[in-house]
Image (cartoon, rainbow, N blue to C red; front, side, top):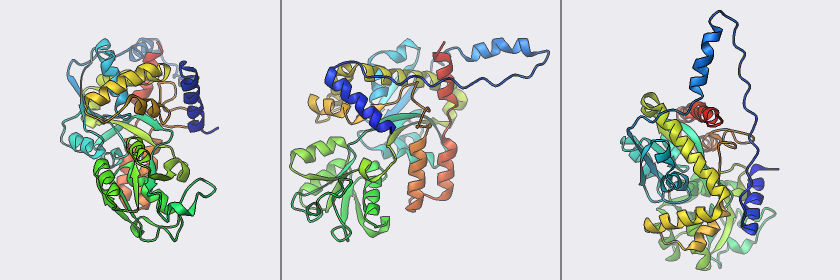
Amino acid sequence: MHMKKVLALILAAVLALSMAACQKTAAPAAETKAQETTQKAPAEAPAQETEAKMPTASGKKVVIGTLANWVGLPAWYAYAEGYYEEVGLDVEIVNFGSQGTLVNEAMAADECDIAVSGMASVYALSTGMYTYIGDGCLTISGESLYARPDSNIYATGPDANGVYGSKETLKDATILGPMNTTAQMNAIAYMQYFGYSADQFTFTNLDYSSSLAAFESGQGDLIAVNPTYAAYLEADGYVKVADFTQISTQDIIDAVYCQNEMLEERPEDVELFLYCYYKACADMLANQDNRVAVAYKWYVDEGLNYTEQDVINEVSLKSYFTLESVDAGEYKLGDFMRFAGEFLLANEKVTAEDLENVKASINDTYINNVKAWAAK
């Protein structure tokens, strides 16, 4: 069964029974390579034992750039629950609203050490300046496109996959949404579904709130949004024509990446951050009530127009990896970033060199180190 369906069933059970979410059985650890028999072999064993120990924090501040929504929630949850303090990390969380491009800019300016961000991360990774170290939030559904209820696009009715639209009704279509995000990827994938290339429709680059205002004022044929704005559109009577999950076989997975210099100078801080991040993910899946409480307070404190029900609904749309499930099973570390790079290359949004940089940036060394010492 597809991993996403499994996660959806798990979350549904959690919500229905108000019990802890089921965790996947940890994948067997990779077998240790046989060491060559030499006179020095006995002396090497203590060194291996040292490598498997939890590292000591450097004592320097770690600045995390992220988004004030489900993307950055594990990083914030770890902060709110005191996990960083427990391992000696001095962490500052810097929020950039819902704009991953702003996170990229902050990383480029060396204002942040680690980024927990969305699809826009692929553009940062394409520069070769950063290392991809962890998989973030897993989207179950909610990245959608909406039309007006009286639209001829919606009037076509759903096809066998539940997708609305047709080659004829989408000719010369204009779609609103923020560029360099999953919204743009969703728009391109939707139009390709009906046989149009990325240069055969208009994508108007506006942030989510501006796109919503423009769409409600009559501009554009469609709007591409995340779950927050999908809820606003639903409440105002607009209709969904497609979800990314209906037009693509690839799951959307958010990114955790860091400055290359951070790994050179403070790899111990990177490992400790990953440990705290995935501990937060596991705890959120096991205690949905506390996940909702921490998230709701954070969102409201950040000035977001959220209700508690919005956060409860989010639980069914967004899941997370844990130390047991990250880089395991069907999901190999960085799968979505590879897909995003290849998708953007096919649509002439990045170059072949950019794609090679994205692929080269993915490094599972640090998450494997954490798995090794966390198991002790």
